Image (cartoon, rainbow, N blue to C red; front, side, top):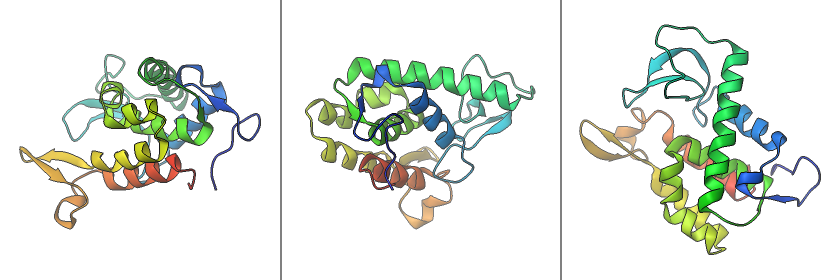
Length: 180
């Protein structure tokens, strides 16, 4: 079932004006512990790219290797990050979107980075009003670099090394289309 807007079906939002309920829904989705989402880890670890990461995929100066973060600290870091990320997404994509669309695109941008989202063909299609075509673009982001080469995570020989990329892209596409 598609997500509904927190204060009424059909209400639309710009990325930069996302309400707190939408930010919390996105943070909750990201923190789910399954392969379609980041999951939450309270002790920093190096991600597949070697970057220090904590909570539901938080990187940067707030991550202190060896420190244990609390549930509340992770929630605050994630909410602050998502709010800033959505604001920045609103600078490159104009218009208003359904709750489920903002949730899907927020999840996508959280994983590929705001600059990756903003420079993508998906963002161009969103700006052109081509919503279905934009959702289709998500599938193109299924590649990772493994052993120095770009690998297609949908291929069986690479899937186990891709950290849930395929499940994430499938969840994002389904959510984007309103069927998740």
